[in-house]
Length: 294
Image (cartoon, rainbow, N blue to C red; front, top):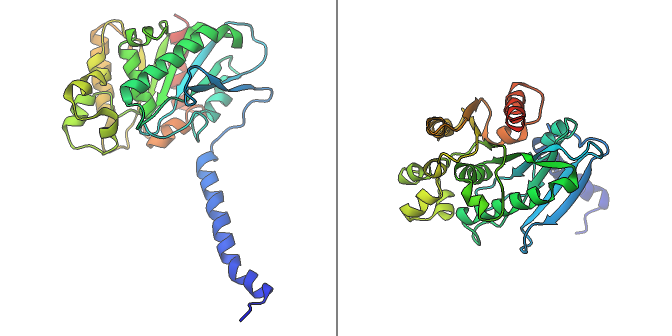
């Protein structure tokens, strides 16, 4: 029997409404706190820092301002397997906050699992860092005033390089001002892999204890380390702040500045909310300003 068009539309209407609401809800969750990119922002997208199509970066800047602007280089998270330089929470609030303050903002992609493990991904971050330093003046940036920032898996990668900056030097990167690690639970990879842990860590770090030590920022930490601010969620059951405190204490014992910022935010909010007005952003901002003024 043929269903009249009017009846068919009425039957499908609830489904259409449900789909629309679901899409709207997802957009709200992803972008409810996303600020607009400042008017006049210049965005240079998909600049190649390597031969692989994943080795790309985006540069956000405002026109003018001379060639002495500090730079933030952002490394996205995603369990070493997923994520994107333009993903939800990665750039928007940070760009909106810090471009008007005179920063250049760079967001990078890198090769991921299964093609590259965590150690190899850190090498990609080092390559991107070297490229940014080499080209900083073209964007009005100051290579000597650079903050390396990362969230989740990206926070692990930048912490690993910060603990032993000689690793980045191999790829042509010079020393940078400081690093901001946003909610990594892999600062002590050795202890992480020795206890019960989420399966996402196994592909990243493998089963070899020697490899765990190589990939562990805490164990790579030396006197040449770059100052680091470890932001951590106090809501997580795996207690990333414990690892952040251990890293900070060892760093300070070596004479290298390190701070911990525990935040009553979940893992996604730690990344997404950075740049929004408030005490959290102000604390990170203070650390960056002090680091780039040295």
